[in-house]
Image (cartoon, rainbow, N blue to C red):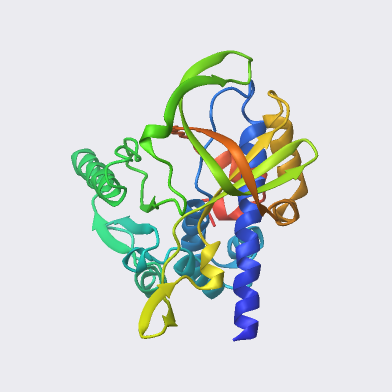
Length: 325
């Protein structure tokens, strides 16, 4: 059990490393560094883990090295554990949907199909990608499936398909959590929010005060906002039993906000974070509760779309992205 835990821990570090390396790559490819950047490292990790389930040789070696895992089993175990839904016990609602669509002429290996279904809980469907009208029907089916899995947040993820399409691996993650220390609507005010170019836009800001988890470092601060943790550990007081979160679950779901001291210091902070690797997060996320007189956070919605093929090649995937292999 201890060795298994160490392997999963190594894979977890691989997830963090992938997140930072992709962040560095995506930021580097933003020529003017304008606009927002948002992506789900876990979703990308899960997709690559599923690819690894069907890979072999050099392609498999590349994937395991990039994802920081010793085996396919370690990848599947990490993804399965990270995506547990704790909503019934008071934790966040997490919905992970995974699907494999393959052309009727493509025969999946039994071992890959079994891993996809049993470890990733994937739906596996055979469709006609070769006929134009049928391919469009398949595209609409996949987009509807993603829309349902994300509660309507993502509605058009798959572009028009061509006749060369033989296999599509699709996943979607939906997360909905409640703050451990909620903000109230009556404490929302419209104030100036400053962009990187120095201009200000009026933005709804939520306000809070009291005890918060904060760390102060040279050049930036870190705020950690916990989500409500699943309650599964019984505690007795006289004849009364209540449920409390396990110690390890209290910090399982959090939003960490990094705030540069300089108004234009975001990208330099991102560069430092990406260059330092997972150790940077470990060293700087040690926070303690402090009394905060005024806390302001912007309410925001963000979207981002990008083909990651070139970025994945630049961080080490070659054989895995070669259709001949």
